[in-house]
Image (tube, rainbow, N blue to C red):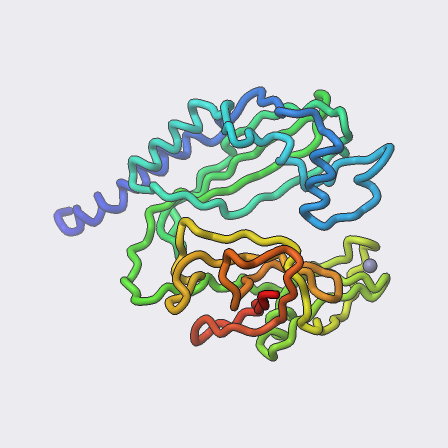
Length: 315
Ligand code: ZN
């Protein structure tokens, strides 16, 4: 009876807290949201250009919107969300108050029930679908909160968008003299790419059915749907298609101890025609231009990690 009282108290408190936050399951996160614009060809075109998706289904008369745009039609834009419910705000306040002050989006799942077409009016409701038990992750300890948004087009169910975040208390980090780059997420769909990098080869997937090249690596072909593929090795030549220069916030892991200051992230068009995102190095960030020729090299960022980057040359 006397032994372990403190321990019991320590265990019960999180359970009580969990019971409180779990009560928010099933409560509205947003009600009667209305998309700021009707589904429209201009947003579809911008999306397809940004994604490099040239599927004919998204152009011309009878066009539909790419299914993965589902959430885009519900977004509040720079002026922000005006439709978050009181329950959602309360849940966040509770989590913040318990020390789970950081937030990271972890994943989303979508289900498509009906194609969206220009002219469709988007409305939506969202519900707090689940609040997980307390979990400890590499980032820290906290609760996963899953929100399910039900989206309608002209009143008909069009799809669902499930969005999961982790509200967490940041883990105490050992002070480190040097920040390391984030590790790539390697899975069965992209393992071959990283095996190539280990051999200093930049491999592009090629569809066995229609020979379309694709990058980044994906399980299937966007042109023909084929799932068989082989690879071609990039020559390493390319040009800067577009780029951004990061000034703030500064991430020492990216700018590097010997190259402090702004760094450039380029969208590089390889000679083979596909584009990839990587650092453009060897040129001051303010000298990088679209169209600049670049050449592949492999950068060892630390003992465990090598990355393909592109060295520019000032013309
Ligand atoms: Zn194909």
